[in-house]
Image (cartoon, rainbow, N blue to C red; front, side, top):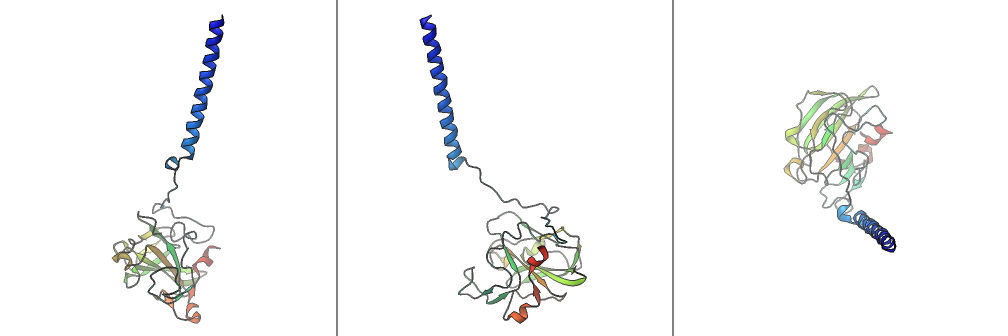
Amino acid sequence: MKKILIFIILLLILIALSYSIYKIIQKNQTNDPDNTQTSTTSIPSKSSPETPSSNFVFPITQFKERITKKPFSIHVTPQNSPVQPERFTGYHTGTDVEYQDITTDVPVYAIADGEIIYSNFVSGYGGVLILKINISDSVHSILYGHLRPSSLPNIGKTFKKGEQMAVLGTNYSSETDGERRHLHFSILSNDRIDLKGYVQSQSELSEWIDPLTLYK
């Protein structure tokens, strides 16, 4: 009887030790940075852009979150620019959406139904397209810059809201004319073609609209 009691006590001690070892191992795995899952940025498919609660879809995924360096109307010089080195000076006519951390294709979308009125390679941008759309019953030109030239649609092609039109160019390559990987997105106050990314006065800047006003 005494031997059975000793055996039971030893068995209980063994079980308790095994459980303690298991909890220690589990805790170490949880705290080990090599075992911690890291989040990844998911680029949506060409048929599923992000849709805010407005009449327009975003031109690119994570549109608002990635405007981190050059918002609309910021005045930059080679000395004070948040992007270095800087080769431009003036008031920024659009918003820059940063994508240097993404190596896969990044689609850009038609924010509304529209027609392509410009599609070409432009110095300082790389690939550029301009989409003509209606905003509050007025016609406006929407410029997308730093696109892969081979992905550009033809002039005259029409797109429905949310359709993929092209993809961003490769970081610091001929596709972006040597610029970092980002989308320059600007809205003209009418339907003219104007490729300027910067202007030299605030009165000139009044010819453009802050893109974020579409998504309030």
